[in-house]
Amino acid sequence: MWNATKPRVDATWQALRLWLGATVLPAQCALCGIGCPQVLCPPCRAQYLGQGRGQARPHCRQCANRLDDVAQLCGRCLRQRPAYDATITAFDYAAPVDQLLLQLKFGARLALAPLFAQLLYAAVQQQSGWERPQLLCPVPLGSARLAERGFNQALEIARPLARLLQLPLQPRLAQRVRETKAQSGVAPQERQANLAQAFAIAPEQAALLPGCHVGIVDDVMSSGHTVNALAAACKRAGAAKVSILVVARTPPR
Image (tube, rainbow, N blue to C red):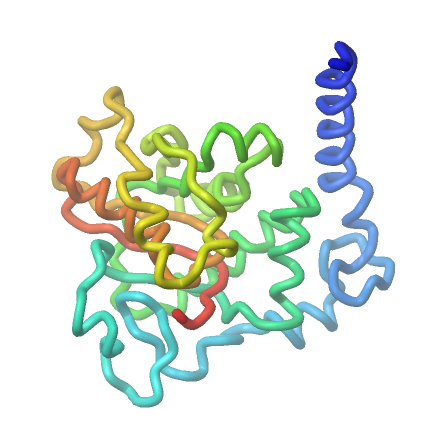
């Protein structure tokens, strides 16, 4: 039997969960659990997210995949160039810092988003010859997933990052026009097809893109199909260059 109060209860719980993630929970370190006023205690931040962490080994300048030598591009990008032109990442997606991203995405610990923005900003500052985008666009969620989660983690990261980089944020530039399965639940060989034609540029925003350098912001990049599909949509609308700014990079499968 349908319960008329259930949507209201769900909305109330979602609001409470978001409030807890933004206020109460940051009273302890997200990694070690020790009481501290920041989301990470100074020892954990220094040990796991210190300056240059995850950047010691060479990375492909286009997709940020790890390289075993000092080559500019990885073999995958040489064989089939993606739609995006460059990628900057703050650290590799590995324990224990992967738990921080999971806490943001699935635990609504929104206070972690500004930390990720700071780490991305630091990575940008360390990148020699980096060309600044003209605007930032977070990877959009589908309406069903946004309603379920209550927030878009890419947008939560992009907001403080745009302020740090002093760039305009265009959260409605792109739309997810087709609901897709979560990439983590899709077989690697099916991930590209899962994202095919999933994104489109909002008609009222299309005039921004001809000749523009777009910065796409996301939390995690694995196979790269999500950001590649969005970058392709931007290029079809006339963007001259697309750069990816992603908090963590996991090696492609």
